[in-house]
Amino acid sequence: MPSPAEISRRAAVGVLAAGAVGFLTFGGRTKQQQPPRGRLVLDYWEKWTGHEGAAMQRVVDAFNASQDRLWVRYLITTTIHQKALVSILGGNPPDVLGLYAFNVPSYAEANALLPLEDLAAPAGLALTDYAPGMRPIMQFGGRWYATINTGGTLAMYWNRSIFRECADALRARGLSSEEPPRTIEELDAAHEAICRVKGGGTLGSGPLERAGFLHMEPGWWSWIWPYYFGGSLYDPAGDRALAASAECVRAYEWVESYTRKLGVEHAEKFRTGFGPYGTPQSAFLTGEVAMVVQGPWMANLIKAFKPDLDYGVAPMPVAKDVYDPAAPVACIDTDVLMIPRGAKHPEASMEFVAFTQRQENVEALATAHCKGSPMVKVSDAFLANHPNRGVQLHTSLASSPRAFIAPPTPVWPEYKDLFDTTMMDLWKLAEPAATRLPSIQARAQAMLDQARAYKVTRGELPA
Image 1: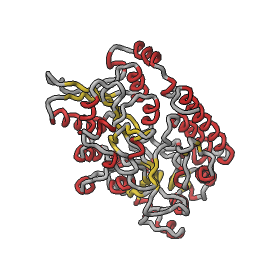
Image 2: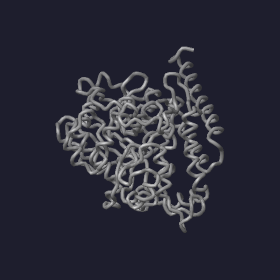
Image 3: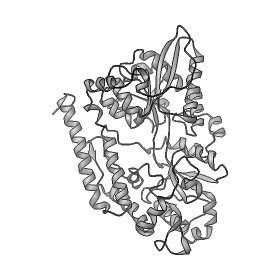
Image 4: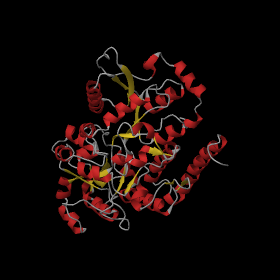
């Protein structure tokens, strides 16, 4: 998909004209009551289905029942980030839009969103209501464009039963079977203690039966590893790609060290035998992998398919020279609500958005999604009654001074694609990290420079 800035209004209208009439172009709708006569109808496009969609529908229903002027229709949309942008640029946007955190910079850059400052204050919302780590997601270019719908933070889930089973091997490496690893060095040691090779051989000598940790399980976040070594992929102040920094090279050399010890053929055969996320055969549930980086939604999977699994939740380990227990490093990966530019009734849209941000509604939705709260104020009942035993950690990670988000640039989707491809090559030892990452940095910088040149051409930046 081309960057949002490259999509013209003419192209957007052309795509709209080619589709079916009405909302059928963009997806289906949930089953719900017809709006009562006399109410202003607001269309809310969202990506959630299943239990997550049902939980959001309950929030919508509560809003519709709370007053008699507005009526929100919850409409489920496939490939929402593409279709929503086309609808906005085509002059026929929804009233409220639910997207992902990484969409905020590209939509803001495309002038597809309404800034919220003037709308939020009369509705009783302020940026200071949100955990500090959540606020950068909500803003771009010094303006406020989004609220947090549900707040996800990444942590390490670890199988406590497997740790107890491997108590002697862990103890021999100076580790406790009752505590998770805190540093990369401890993670490596725990991984090797837990690994099991068929026939009882040494690592790399034969097929794997169990691993302690694998970077490619689930493989959704190919780009996060440098942050656990004190690095970053992007310098927003200088608009610079940092993929070839010393910290990044160190991180991906660490990734390579795992397949080098396990054996590429053995590691790949083992990994490709895992069931996909969302099934009982996923590797953490079957015990094939004892530690995995995941978001709070992992608890929903455990609850559905392995409710007796004894798991713990801890911050992802970091390099020893980076470790600070008071400031854990954590990726924030959230869903957001935005008001598209061209929305016909922005104040009414904001009224609904503000309703979703009330503490009781935030916590009800977060509980259903098994996530932590994105807000500063969190009720004791939310933490005490939550189905995810790691909820307190997930919530606190959003306020860590070292929480990080995806690089806030409109070219991030293309930049991330480079890392997704590179990660597989590094995992298979196709090319050393020290020689591959400089080419990634050069390509990413070219994207950033091109985006800047486009803004200069439009008069948005000085030459």
